[in-house]
Amino acid sequence: MNELIVVIVNQGYDEAVMTAAREVGARGGTIFNARGTAEAQDLVKFMGITIHPNKEIVFILTAKSTRDKIMTAVKEAAGLATDGAGIIFSLPVDSVMGVKLSDEN
Image (cartoon, rainbow, N blue to C red; front, top):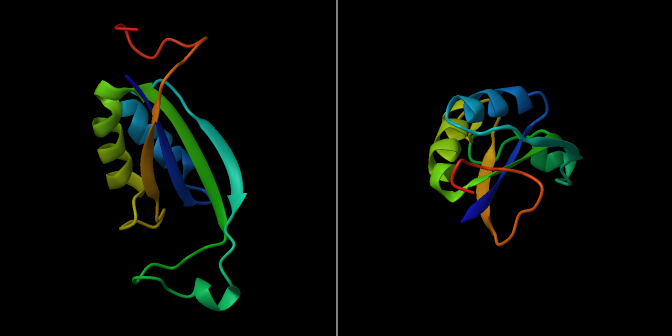
């Protein structure tokens, strides 16, 4: 019924993620600063994309009914084909307390 969308982007692209997500129904998110562990020589290019060690991880908790719209919007704004080089995936969430994710819950 609910999903956790996880977005890992290059540092500085968290606002692009959240702006795109909010435009299609996300109510908010949580941002974590992170650092990748790739070796320095591996940072050059991977599949034509420059890999940067400093990352931001964005968690967006949402109703399953809005998951695909949010993921598509985030992919277009900050996905792998952009400078944000975002990796996006979702995980099922069995139970949520303390937050209203949609008018249905």
